[in-house]
Figure 1 (spheres, rainbow, N blue to C red):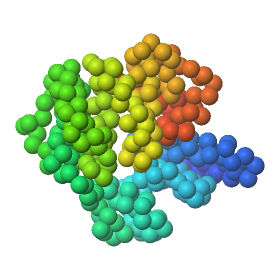
Figure 2 (figure 1 turned 30 degrees about the vertical axis):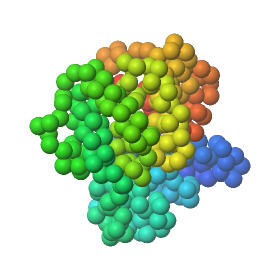
Figure 3 (figure 1 turned 45 degrees about the vertical axis):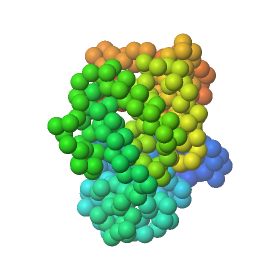
Figure 4 (figure 1 turned 180 degrees about the horizontal axis):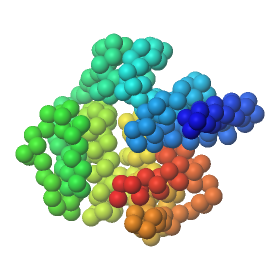
Length: 298
């Protein structure tokens, strides 16, 4: 009975969203965004059956599904053994989307992904150096990224796991040298993973706030060029603002997170009433979901 009611709720939401799409496209876009993030949350909770239903609803609601929603939905179907459905959806994608989707290990094994599974970069040596710096950045914070370590065959004995402040300083100084030598790197030069690592190292460059602030324009340009996603800009923008004692704009920074007492307080935020609209524009999850997520991970 519970599953039946759940199905009715999902179908009902789809019908409502379809009606809204005819009368108010902006509202329909917001509903698609919320549904997509609910699907991601279901997948993270390993409720793959629900995630698949939500993904199917998304496919019925929009012809231009966000890449992260498409990837999560396809990986969900793959985990449920729906290989033929995954292949059918992959075959319907254009070359650019297929290239992005097929970089994922689970999906890259599918037949439509043959020839799209390896990202070519212009400077492999620089890519590997940045990846190792990225791995150290995360390991110093207790996050051993097994997928990245495996993907790039990183020697685990060389990973620095302690001393985030020292790692941040070392990485920051090396980034300055790299930027001086190559300019601000591009995805074409070093690849997607290394670019995300660069963003995180800048995000953690609180030891030199002036330099950190100077990198915001580079991150913004990287987002415009498709080398980074909009979330990277939002996180760095807010961090710089909070570090300067100003109001953040996207709600990525918190003043207090207390999982024991279930308390989550944002750092001072401008125009809270329109916060979710701004978050949606840059691909961030709804703020209510983000708060629940923070209580889980801390």
